[in-house]
Amino acid sequence: MPLSDPTKIIQSEIHRVVSLLRANKKREAIDHSLSLSEKFPTSVPIIQLLSNTYISIGDYQSAIQQYSKLLSTDPHNPIILKNLGAMHLKNDQPQNAIYTYKKILDFAPNDAEVHYKIGNAYFENSDFTLAIRYYKNALNLDPNFFEALYNLGNTYLTLKDFNKAEDLFNKCLIINSNHTGLLGNLGIVFLESGEVEKAINIFKNLIDICPSPIAKEYLGRALLLKGRFQSGWKYYEARLDVADKYPVFLQQKARPLWDGEEGKDVFISLEQGIGDQIMFMSLAEEAQIRCRSLTILVDKRIKSICERSMPSIKFISSKEQIDNIDFDYQLPIGSLPRLFRNNEIDFQKSRVGYLKADQNYVNHLKKKLNLANRPLVGLSWASFDCLTSDKKSIELNRLREALNSFGCDVINLQYGNVKRDVEEFSNNINFKFINDHGIDVYDDIEGLAALIEICDLVVTIPNITIQLTGALGKEGWVLLPFSPNYPWTDYRKTSLWYKNIDIFRQKKINDWTEVLAELEEMASKFFK
Image (cartoon, rainbow, N blue to C red):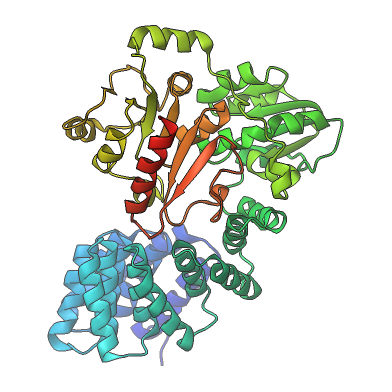
């Protein structure tokens, strides 16, 4: 075959582009592919090459344009249509993907893979009802279609239908018992269903197969729920190996992690949410005893209250300030419990009221609000912008009957835009509901602390409000979802972290009925 033969030339040039891609010379690969496309505009291999080159740099829109050219030459080619649908999904165009995949069903209605892919597209579009329908279509055509079975389970997990998710995942185990994603999600199902021991066994099995940091962190959280603190904190440390969780500025500073060495200069960095920082701050004074000097980076919203409450510890609120301090060791704040809280007896060392509200602010609020001589309950009922917001929030209207029986006034401690909730709630109540205190309880933590200080009791879901209530040493009742986060354990009636916080737990998933009944009963005793 002569060297000038187009087929031979095309194959040679394709090999050259592939070599450039393997050498990570993607820009050169794109330029060469475009040059070839100009020379051979109708060559299917060149169009495919250019498409794949665009895919390698994440330019899915350009890849879609190339696949559309292929489709114009062969409109019923299922491979081209499937690839085009996949590109639409990668380009965040699930509706276009659905339209493309459904073209295949016009001439191949029994293609289980296509039904499965349509299910994926509907899932990406958050249309879970149709996602379920098409996953089931795929399974009717191929009952052992693992991916369809697995994603159907994931859909039910997303919808928090844990019974159906567990059933489907167990069927998946029969087909592939070592699938890491399956084991991880089944562990999550067990955690959410309150079957923590099963979750522990699943995560241990997963770690044997694939010792990923996420699996270890989940195992740590599950062990902590059961009060197995020493092993729990050990596995919880794996969170620092999860991408984007370990503070980058600590890596840049390059100091060893503190393991309790005495007489050293230690820097503690912030991590996680502000509520977690408040909780872990209960360990700061114990840490300080071991140190020559202790510096803690905190959220700027709690810097002043920390400085007032623990004046012998240096608090900073800017990462830039780290350059102005020197230290021997460093530690993320969430690692302090591993050093100081390895059994329930250790928690008895916690000081009640380790944070102090600004008394001037407190006096100002008392005067401004002109409070009646009645008990005052602080109230917070919702969480926003976190993965567990929906399961731990409660509708404000559902609290009306319980609060009516308290015989007290109520003050709003809820952050966020809850104006409509408050307007609906304010009808048909037999108590004063103080909503116009003028404090932004999200940004003004000193203001929130002062509001909590004037309360006789705080009733709230697990959010920053209960953490601050506990840290201030005020009486608090926390309303917990069926599957709480690890600090609350799954077995106690009072908080380990805060002796002044009582726990009211859901007995069934997403069912607050018994919790509300308990509130009414306890209120009659608390305010008698």
